[in-house]
Length: 88
Image (cartoon, rainbow, N blue to C red):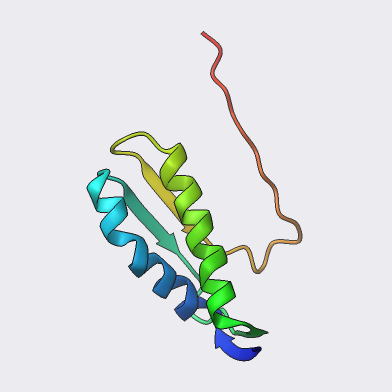
């Protein structure tokens, strides 16, 4: 069921649920969100699950002791995903 949810709060709740798992692997999490990200009409459980899945994917792909960064992209005109490789 759709509800008006605060985006920043929902993201922080999903992250709080993943803290123990991140700590077990020695991962740090850098969180950079706008102070007021606003609200959206969404299923709150589904939204938190999406954020949790993204964090879980980052957890699985990160080596022990790595840092995971979560930031908003509300003011960006597009989403970009880049992957950088170092060539010896």
